[in-house]
Length: 334
Ligand code: DGY
Image 1 (cartoon, rainbow, N blue to C red):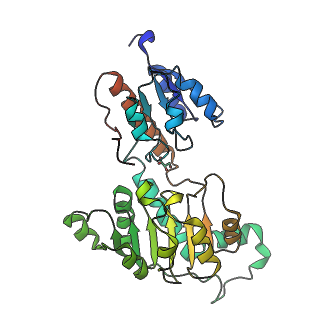
Image 2 (cartoon, rainbow, N blue to C red):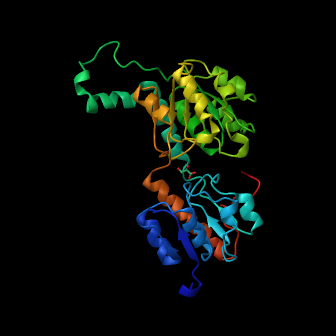
Image 3 (cartoon, rainbow, N blue to C red):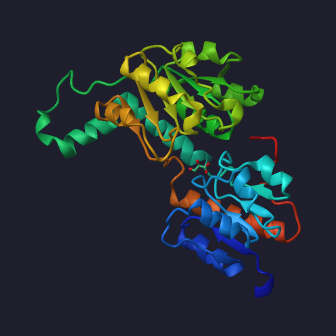
């Protein structure tokens, strides 16, 4: 590639050094070294001149913003697994291809799901905070001190049995949980057999029968508030809910109310409805040890981020070599 022909690539957030170095070598790359989130106006201005936009889940690429793109911009190579922040249909109408970075976040996100299940049921953050924040409160071991809930032998209900849901199920099985799942389609018999998993066509019926609910489906118009107030009310008072997918899949206000009324036992959340804003009621519940809150870090490993960068680079290279990029997101999917 001559430097003249190098595509102009606008990267909206700071990426790992190794990824940025490679991007600089291959592309006419505009980086965001200090990681200040780009404003809508800055994105619109960039889209008028660049060939490729590399956004992340923190950039909202909606129809109105896409209308600002110049005719030269033909690719959105998102540095993300989810694509709910991009109006893929509107992009397709403008002849813009969208790609994402699937597969490389699966194991890390599944790990974090299990971490939240353990943290909520076994009161990990509460225990750790006592030693660092109130060490005087610990008078030594006692038979009734810091009792949590056992995991082994309980039932997990996985909502969305795609790659991440299946990886969660594998880990959950090793922790002695029995696997229940709801999905648009039943998974193949070999996977069901391996996981000894029970498929529930009815989400309502599954929710009423499990001890742990894990949200692992993508955010789409069809899954918006899938876990609605009505469905949340079906949960047992001893059950907990864990969300490492997207905040808008759960009716967050209804979940908060159930937690306050002790109608569910707890929640472990990595994602929020109005991210990065967090409902202050959730913070209060966290301070009471009722919920464990993480700042959307389910996939945050250096290995995962480098793998994501590699995928973005491959998608851009393949596209500009005139081929169909491997991780193309088809319109009509979100
Ligand atoms: C993604 O890429 O969709 C993840 O949510 C980021 O962690």
